[in-house]
Image 1 (cartoon, one colour):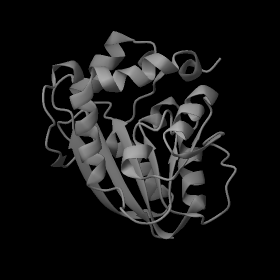
Image 2 (image 1 turned 45 degrees about the vertical axis):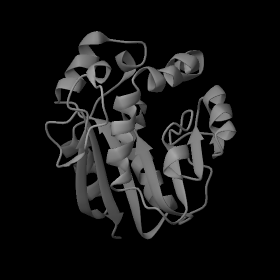
Image 3 (image 1 turned 180 degrees about the vertical axis):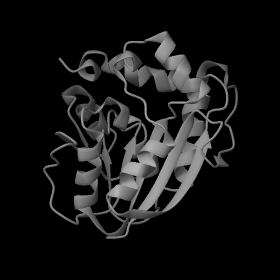
Length: 206
């Protein structure tokens, strides 16, 4: 069974337990997620990001998470990011939040995201930065989810996106302390360091 199906309650509870870290991540995402247009989140999970950000559609392989995402108002479907059951050029923007680290073939998922994006559409990729204090902490901790993760750096993600024809990059960051130590909402900053949570936005140029 998919670990996210097996531990879906633990996953969803993290966002309540670490409320200010979660809200800080949302603030960074709000800097780049379009307020208009048709959006898709690949790896939508329980819609903890899609629902408050107004992302109308989602896809995830974890059936129990998809059920919760639907209850939160997102048109979520069970499926794979490597083979999206969606038409070409169907979305104005695509978000992949944290999920890239858990995918067997991130390059293929990014290629699929490009396929379903309209020309000049936006891709938003949020990661736990591999080289950050947070990336090192999670790898050392080896928790039930992050022991399965293959963290990437912002540079690695940008290189893959550039190779697929994306351009016009911007970077925002959040999480400057360990999540359980954050006691208020952090103000997001531009750039990709030293924050543990990095949001990369780019445009489909060709």
